Amino acid sequence: MTSGPRALICGVTGQDGAWLARLLLEKGYEVWGTSRDAQSTRAANLNTLGITDSVRLISMAPNDFRSVLTALDRSDPSEIYYLAGQSSVSLSFEQPAETLESIVTGVLNVLETIRLRRKPVRFYNAGSGECFGDTGGEPADEHTPFRPCSPYGVAKASAHWLVANYRESYGLHASTGILFNHESPLRPKRFVTQKIIQSAGRIAAGSQERLLLGRLDISRDWGWAPEYVDAMWRMVQLDTPEDFVIATGSSHRLEEFVATAFAIHGLEWREHVDESPDLFRPTDIPYSGASPLRARQVLGWSAAQRMSDVVRLMTEAL
Image (cartoon, rainbow, N blue to C red):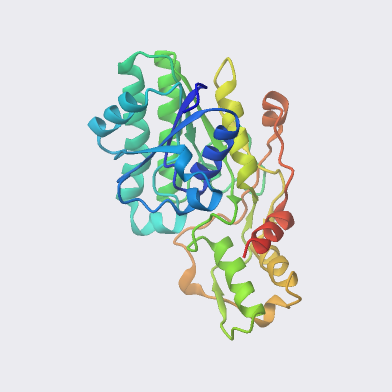
């Protein structure tokens, strides 16, 4: 076991948790990670990255304060990264209560545990560009008001303000990364980007299926997840904690993402894709874009991979 700094990643088996674990291990950290049931967890993402045996996996239910306290006592970390909770915008419309509980109550329990334990620890909270909602076509930055359009966005906005409140009220080193869309081959298949990549690959291999999607005119800022976890780490290293927008700074229509994915295989996407009103969300953000200028100025971080790169890298991993 390394003698370096010790980090606890809440939600280590998810996409971001696995990439962050690998990054921290490369930096010499002792990495602990939580899942609701460590004994039965299928750590597929950790296995894919070849780091399963290097992560100390422990059980933690974020909505149970005693469980959170026990996990922090066992791991005794110097850094905590809260990446747990429901992660799908579309699913949040079907499970709004679970979404708010896993995100808001989870963050509150960790913050309160940090406050009561009175040990020096730095806390990172995974925020979301969904907090901003519809910005009227303007890129969002750290001063843009929140107007969330989904239960997921509402939960992330609430957690954001909890972190700010504990930072200001109790002097905690706590910050939120307001991350816009970021993808990788570790994305679950229910996410639209993975759905597109996988379907394009199967169709190119001879499948006669039709790819059904919701609105194709929405615009999003898509980045590369392994780069975004580096931004998380950089935020935690600051002497003075603050919140940052993390994004590429370039937004594209979903139609462009689809076209790029099919073009890699030499296919015309319109011949294989249908837009289905059944997949439209109750509310959807027409344009989601960001200005990551402050992250570049203060963290020295900027995204190297853009949307077309993300599509290519995900396709290469098929």
